[in-house]
Length: 238
Ligand code: HPA
Image (tube, rainbow, N blue to C red; front, top):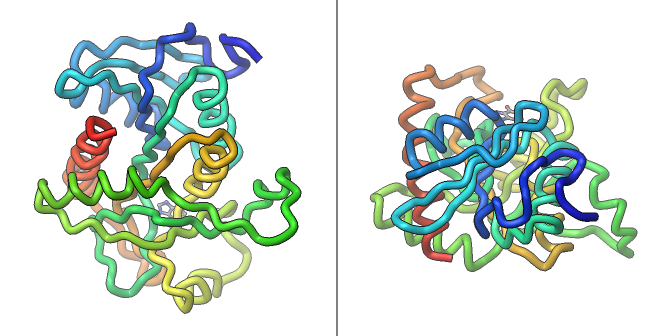
């Protein structure tokens, strides 16, 4: 398929080799306006604003993934396959599963478990383990260290449901040492693997589902800034 795609109206070459993907389109706009220089709008199909600008002189793009694996699946596929994007960094929020995690902690998904059937398209003769790019993970760890942020690295759980009929889902993943629940990383990692490209998901802990705790909007903003700085400093190391 050529560009534009069914979901992205940008021209070839409009995206940088590295794209940051928050879930929320308004977050993408905020990142473009507050963290990038000379950001220009390159897509606005369905209100999914895509922006390309520079960070410390390096070209970086930002575009929302939307919520959930089908949405992340579409946008990351089109970026990797039709816009020649090489690296995608998800910058999202997650609910803590691991008891040691606190609100506003920043976690990087070394891998992502999932209840999604996304993997079935590959018809593999066993269970697949979606993993992050080791190179990107190392770059993120280095960037976090430089910022004095304690980046927590481990397993994420990418869920197809935000409202799940089963009430014991989180304790069961907790027993396996999983850090946090979100809804996109596994699809991103699988698309990257299949495309021969690289991806990493970084999330700030916005809530603790087991206790019902959540961040205020101000707390969310501060931890979001830390995560963005780590993501951008990762981008310039690639
Ligand atoms: N569940 C799923 N996705 C999330 C959550 C959650 O509790 N918090 C942030 N993203």
